[in-house]
Image (cartoon, rainbow, N blue to C red; front, side, top):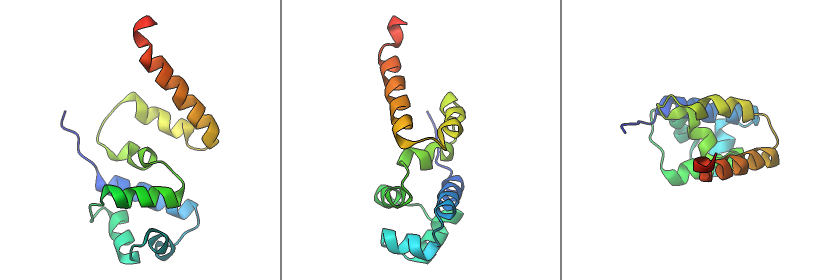
Length: 111
């Protein structure tokens, strides 16, 4: 399995979420303890970010790391088609949906 992270797509997703949250690069940088230049590099895909930085950005933007990475991994699968359907739903409803999917996945052999 040879999957790569598309850092430009990841940066675009971070930028879109930052803008939807009405944050500037400077504000996001301050909240994540990063410079605005560093945020700019991340958003352009010219800087590879650490797991810790990705986690901090996800926390500030109030999204999961999965949400940021979903379309950033070069992979054509069914999950990429589900993510947009969940995008604007309540966090509790999404968690309920994911729990149902987990139960189904755990019991797939019995279906």
